[in-house]
Picture 1 (cartoon, rainbow, N blue to C red):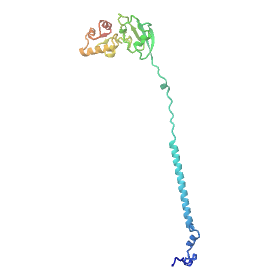
Picture 2: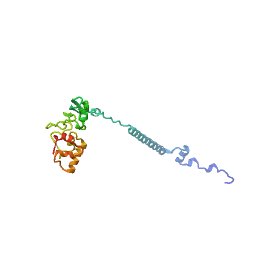
Picture 3: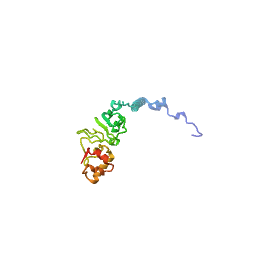
Picture 4: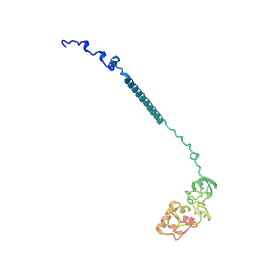
Length: 236
């Protein structure tokens, strides 16, 4: 072409010489040709609807799971039992306090109370009371008799077959054998507390069995007055 001449229109192919499919494309540009195009659109539309349905179902399942997992479960608390809420009162013991106390008589005390509690319930010692004759730390027993002697009086001998603690600080059910008694048995003797009872055991361990009740004089802390109070309560 010389000088940029435009080709003649007659050189372009005529519409009549085009195929049917080509004419269809020219007649409706951008539109799928024939039934195959419309079928493809239908399949794409159905696929999109299926995907949307699946997405909606998955979303509903996830929302339900999140709601169910976030709900807090409530566990009912058991009501406290009556036994746990109400404290149990200790059992009572009946004790007979007599001798050199302000108000001799029968007194009801709590289980686990000691001789000192019984003396206090009876108004305390009188001026004549021999306070050293009692083991004030001894635990009381039901039906026990606590007799407080006056200074110079010998402590009462235990009754034969009496229960433990039948007389405060005295031996129970017979004489206490100095060669076989343990700390608890020696502790029941008048004027013999835990410290003196341990000294008796230590002396027996170091020197062998007692051969006479008078051997108690060799134990530190035991004098003539204490020995006289123990003579009728112990044996060897």
